[in-house]
Image (tube, rainbow, N blue to C red; front, side, top):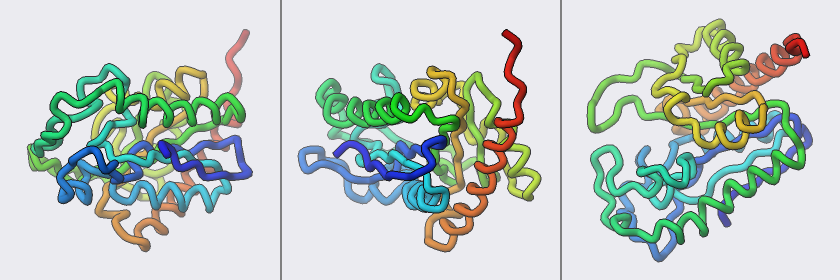
Length: 240
């Protein structure tokens, strides 16, 4: 199974989580000790997406394979799609891997599931959930934000989200810890490419590593999503 599809009655909202899983198929030899690290999974992002799906009664689609097998949040021709190195960790099994085979097994079905959902329901907002490490092992530069909001060219949803979170006292990065203009593959394809407002939420993973943190951030993000939806509803459509 390439996607964990959670149902929900509010089809005007779609939640996504590309890096929800650290699962590795038996025929791919990924070093097991890497699978509990951020290079193997977005720590806390899967449980947080599940919690939001329940709290908001919204559908969610979550990836079911580790990004060390294939990164679902990369274009099919991206050099990091099947990483041979990740934050200083070598992945020997990925050197010379069957790229087309892994795309067919994992990447294409996951994105097909999202595409089908978007075509069927035409959600009015898509929110992708990710988490980030407090510092990369390769540079040790502290990332002080509690949350980051990423976006591409369409910043309608992001501007509302940033203002809301900062108004709640959340240390929020604008295009941090990296820019959505540089890496926004899933939302570029399924949201911005379809004219649907969207944003990607990054939560620092030490804040959602356990159930209490997940519950706290579920409440914070549920309020943020409500603010975004209300703000978008008040927008004046452009003149024809």
